[in-house]
Length: 436
Image (cartoon, rainbow, N blue to C red; front, side):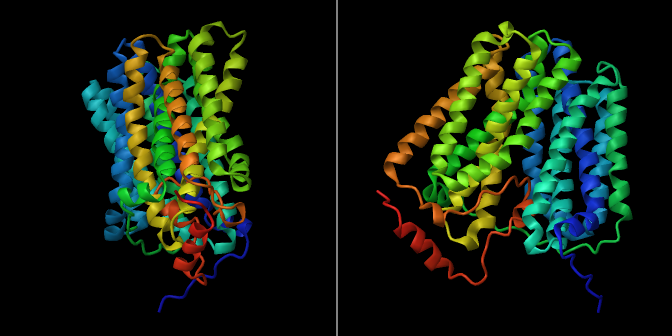
């Protein structure tokens, strides 16, 4: 029998233990984020139609959805380390293929495949983290993991300034980073866990349980997908330099890193739907301001400040929507429900850039016409839902958890209580509200 390695008894000890996994995921994320902004800048500099650019950029989100759904099969076949090596090596090769097969249709396919590889990398790392993290430390470890991910994405945006984005060097650097991500994972002595497939909750059942959660999740996907995919295009058309563009796109991730955790605590203390309406109202107000006055703002720093707030608002909608769904389903379905909502989010993130591209044909500010209209529609829908159903009492709400990216992370959320009578728990919550 293989001896079981003792679990660390503190969040700090856990982070030290799984540090290799964090490093591997972060390095891979820096590379893929760098490639994303390079492709957007290159396509804009070559005069591609916005719709074409959006299709290439949206392919990454579609690929991530495919990878999140099917990566577990490969990991179960060959193990975590070999699967990570396959995903990272393939992604590294895909990065180098872009300047060789220089056509937007090929780039769309490459982005689809690289998005699937990134989802596979995250699935391997996150399920491994879940296995090595004791229940009492999961919240802290997941928070550290999320912050590390945001820092990696900010770093990837800023790294575009080191080399001329029109040349091949950024593709080589992204590929090098993809290869380097292998080293810490390959050197780890952590015992790889068994990974089981996550049984997903039907979307119709999810919608019946909480229409607000479905609307918030797909809307969040559209907001995040459109701004992350086409933010660099907007900034370039606004006349910003490459350095200013990287600050603009990076500020979106800064906002997510700074604001999602405190907003999550706010959503635990009040009716989540009011918090969602407030977040979407902020996103709508900033969208309208940028739609009408983006080119007339007094300084780049005001623009960046607005994007930090906007990024924090849009990043917070998804986890609060997940918590909203959990308020109306039994705890044993939390993992499958969150996995289903991940699918909904990914669909929204894939559609978002395509929808925004049509508005951007009018002018660059059309990006924020899309986010303004969507935010307003979501505010109206959530307000309507508030007239149809009372909120779950504060003391019976489930805590907001930030921010699952794959089923592996969803399993880390430690949402169930083994001692609870699940059906009684749900019945008690539903009996406490007036469900018309």
